[in-house]
Length: 241
Image (cartoon, rainbow, N blue to C red; front, top):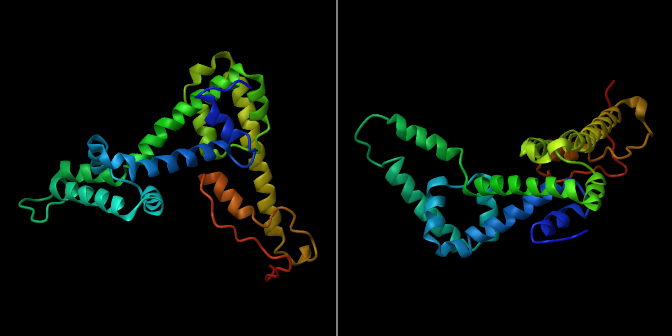
């Protein structure tokens, strides 16, 4: 499989064949951006202007605090809070609530500097995935061998730049639907089996792959992992009558 500066990160996330490859891509981009914001970007005024205006969601604030130095995070928060005080929530208002200011505050509460960047970069990565799937038989086979594509990234793969797939749109849709739709059935069956194991008539039956079905279903539906609460081999629970 030929590699270049664009295809290398795609190959890196597809080769493990473990979970959703597009989730791995998003996680990689998020980590790099969180490190950048609390590192090199500290000396870039144009970045600070954007982070002051856009802020961050809880998920990315948490990543920044976890990965970056405390002073870097404090400096980012200092100027962001100053911006809020000056433009959105004055400490001593002299008039009734301003509709434009409330609208701006609502926009801030639903905005995030890293989310915006990840959205743009993920859309670019989808275009590269499409191009590789169209032109490289080896990558098409690698795509076919993925365990599944999560629901969020199924939507992304099928809605970003459909025109770029041309006459192969239907074939790509069918292939991706098999990965996502097939896993939906697998999850549904395993969650159903988990539920049946609480019936007294299932006493002595094997849990099979259903022991962590709840966590895997949430990951598929949301793209985020829950801490796995796998059941011990000797798990006993009050059964339904």
